[in-house]
Image: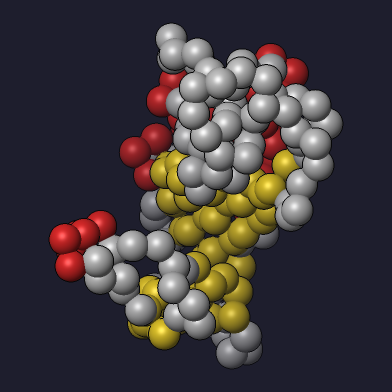
Length: 182
């Protein structure tokens, strides 16, 4: 059985002084610079019959209308079932808002940034598609975290934090790692 995987990423350039999503009901929270890059990443998986993609973006959330629009474009371009295209957002509050759903104070979307974000999604999806290469095997597991990462919301009353992180690794025929997702 043939299996291929591809990946791509691009730094999202956030213009200075553009409004950010913020941490609550107030307007005017502006980008004054970043302490780290924001990314848009794509992962493409092909089993010889079906293709799937994961689009991962540093944003507070991805608007359902945007996800539907981009799923249709990606699906048409690469003959992928739209149901096999997943969007993931990191839920970062230090990113420009992509949409506005009738509530104020969470940042006013910038139309230029919205268009830029959509173009970037298409670019990384395209690059991941063309980056596909044969995968020998995949393995999955879990590993201990070096530091506490959030709160396990399943057992909030016990304040238990899961001390492990789950991962899946896709290995090339030469034994090197193509993709590590965690």
